[in-house]
Image (cartoon, rainbow, N blue to C red; front, side, top):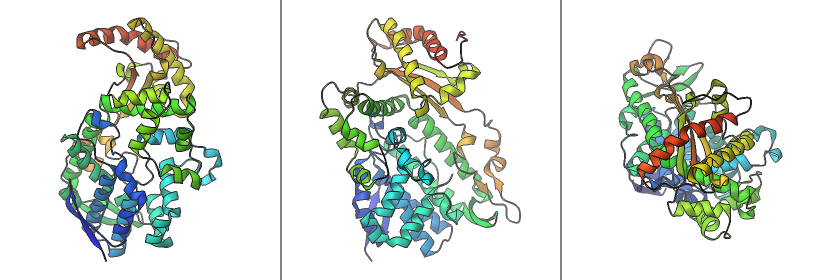
Length: 463
């Protein structure tokens, strides 16, 4: 049985053997070398050049460590490591940034009923595990089915599921440390060894579930806070948000206005083998070369991508907490990025462009004006994310929840989540003084332009 070792930046020497080695050498895994973990974050954090491939190896190593800490048998350990190796193979260029375009342009009408509400990149992952000849030859049909069940809802063992996808999963444990290291920050650092020593599998609701020991609460607090601070300081960094939105808008313009056939084929998912075969041929560099450098002059998509290549970024001209708007406006603003609200978003962006044209005494291309809203969950809410709450083992008693056992999180009001509305636009200012003066003048007119174009909202009021 072949064994290989990698010298990993985060975990030092990590080992893989047998079928794991064969999977790593498969084209669907090697493709991840060309997809950066944090898209264009290197424009603000120059070291953030790590890839989905690096991360995948790290997640697999951590999944194995968790299995060992929990005392899982050889077969269970093998299964969670296979799932970890394959969990990201459905990602497109620029990782999560592609998800927005896939969700917007997928042809869901042709998908089976059970897939119409699934995330597209997850459907691509399942399709690859089911149909990629190299993967099936390596794992065999039965293991492919088991891995798919583990990556989807419904697998019978909550402990294995918790290692692969849950509030304490191997994915989070790796990306917090990896993203911190490559961004050159300490926000995501936590004691991974103490966290793993705190893991335990115990009976709850008629099944074994992943929990932490009571004496591991502080280690989990550190982990959750690391996730909160890295989200706040890196994933929601102003430049990171702008670059992500520029890529997303470039794709949208390339499909809807430029009608670029190659771009349409890349994002109009229909579940067909033809789509998958084409999709697997793309990574970050091919995307930028094809739709940036090689695209026809005058292409709206090319203009935005070339701005990214030159680090000629859109400017943030508006930033305001959602709570500063009327109660009626808040929910609409938080949903403004959803495909169902495309017309509303366009209407607001046209109004914003008009205000900016008056301020800067120059034409402002509304196609490049981007309205964006986002949320930063409270540290307490971050302990759950979209998954179940973290369970705390209490021997001889019913398991408790982290929020009840943690004095720190009990003191945090869960409602204290931050929600913001921002606008990015193709404008310039002479210097910081000019910027501050213009932003002060624009604050009220832009707020009114946004609010008055929301359906059913007439009221204007002062900042």
